[in-house]
Length: 149
Ligand code: FES
Image (cartoon, rainbow, N blue to C red; front, side, top):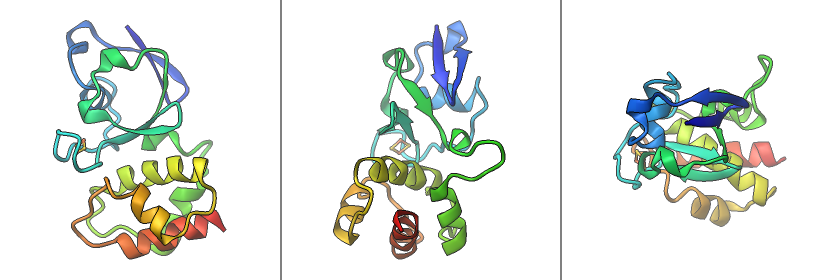
């Protein structure tokens, strides 16, 4: 079984085929930027993109991914250049503990893809499923708007 992850075709070892996409990404593929939070689809820490749409990888069986292109936080930057959303996160110094931030960034990338200039309400709505216990939501709004221009 193969997956398309961050522009590469990778093989999922046979003994990982009953696992979630999150577990496959983190263990055999070593892409640990995607975090395990609740494991139940509730916190958003495990958010990745599937053909550009934000999904919870902890509740997605890897066998359901099929030919969809998976993008993780590691796949956002290219040739040493940060993705504009990552750069905005740095410029605004969004993270506190940082645990949820990969998921926040991936959800933001998906948001800006379908809605280039969201207002606060649209940002809050799009990121409502990405929990942050440090209270960085205000800085997240600033970073999203900075990216949107
Ligand atoms: Fe997947 Fe919480 S770890 S939603």
